[in-house]
Amino acid sequence: MKKWLSAGLLIIGLGLFGHGIYMQAKAWLAQILIAQAWQEALVKPNAHVKPWFYADTYVTAQLSWPKHNKMLSVLAGASGRNLAFAPSHFLPGAELGDKHGGALIAGHNDTHFAFLQHTKVGETFTLQLQSGVIQYYKVKGIEVIHQSQQAFLQTPGLYLLTCYPFDSLASGTDLRWLISAELMDSSPASLSGISTTSS
Image 1 (cartoon, rainbow, N blue to C red):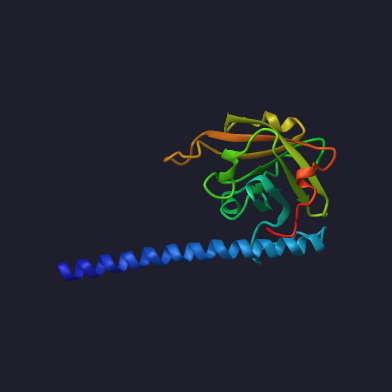
Image 2: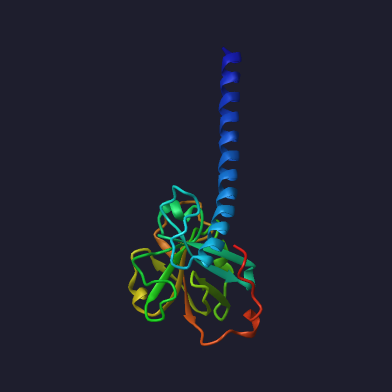
């Protein structure tokens, strides 16, 4: 009986280990495919370029944050599936690049948007649109809000959202970390030489 139990536990352990390796490989490959899709999207500014053929999303922009050494492609549609692979644009909000509405990009606080806990008011970053246009933004506010709050989208700007608190052991909290950024008229010196070819 002990021999069968040991064999069963070994099989379960190997299965869990294999599943973990598979998930890591899948995440790694997804980042490569998303990066390739973004480069293609820049060449085809009017096309919805999917990172893989069966994806129900497409790449739509790229965030670059030199202060935290981050270059992140953005997917369209902030669904749970998309957020597992990249920060994602909340479609009910304004279009990315819209100077007259509030556009929102969401991301997970333990992966792509983990660095947001270290951001400060006054930091600058860029958003490159699929058209190739690069917009420069400055962080103007950081606050904790309830997940039901959406009134901020009525104010023009770019908003980055993730779950809060960052070190919570429980998932599904109802608080969100919201970063508000305003569009700048020109490129700040700290961002003038930024590269936009990576993902």
